[in-house]
Amino acid sequence: MKNTLTVRRSVVKLLDKSLMLYIPLFLAMAFTLFPLYWVIVTAFKREGDIAKLPIQYLPSPATFENFRIAWNVSGFSKFFVNSLYVSGVTVVVVLITSILVGYAISRFNFAGKNLFMLMLLCTQFIPGAMLLIPLFETFRNLNLSNNLFALIIIYSTFQLPFNAILMSGFITNIPEQLEEAAMVDGCSRLKAIYLIIFPLLLPGIVATMVYTFIGAWNEFLFGLMLISKTSLFTLPVGLRSMQGTYDIQYGALAAGSVITVLPVIILFAYVQKFLVQGMSAGAVKG
Image (cartoon, helix red, strand yellow):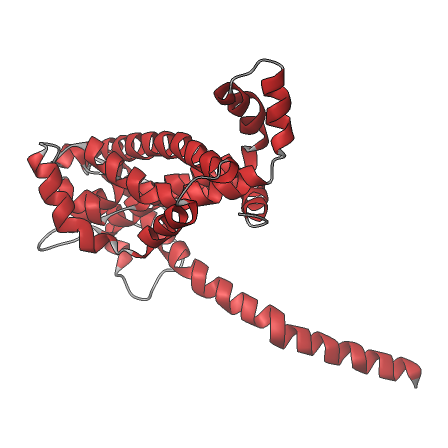
């Protein structure tokens, strides 16, 4: 009798857990991953098989021709370099600036500090599209239209406020006595930041770098409006340029999408441990 009750309870518990946890998670995962799966499958299909009925859920036969067309013919090799350059320089600028601004917010008390932090946070509520025309006119007057440096300035400006606040939370968690001990031994404040703060900030630095890189890598609107030369297109704008007026090469477009998303997936897979540590550390104080 006891064994029967135990089995019933186990079955009921398993059913409850399946209905409340496993099935919703599976449905959410399928809903999220299926578009990515379909893009990958389409990238390896021959152009004539993409719209063929019945639908092929696996490429048969698989081909790399779409990747060759996207990389060599459509110019994705140049788009990739442009995106890598813009995102890399943006990461460096935002990282250095956010560390210095975050350090000032964390370690110094100055008049208007709370107002300054509030203004930094309020900038995140301003839609980028609202600033599109003023920024376009500004960069055109500065002769910086069709210039990747303009994108670096814009991306750094938009990424800095959030990352500066985030970095101040990381720095607050580091005991100030460590810097004081270093300065007693003869270090300047900047040298103490480099020797003491910088190594202890590794999780926060990785988190800042990843979010800044992804934000610059995926940005489309400003890249579309400020860059009209094909040789200066970034990857998102390059994907848009592959949609012709009368036809679309879906295979090459899917291959270009895979090329665009692959670095982000690899980056997340490599730094996810530091990313979790950084976000949890920055959420403790601030």
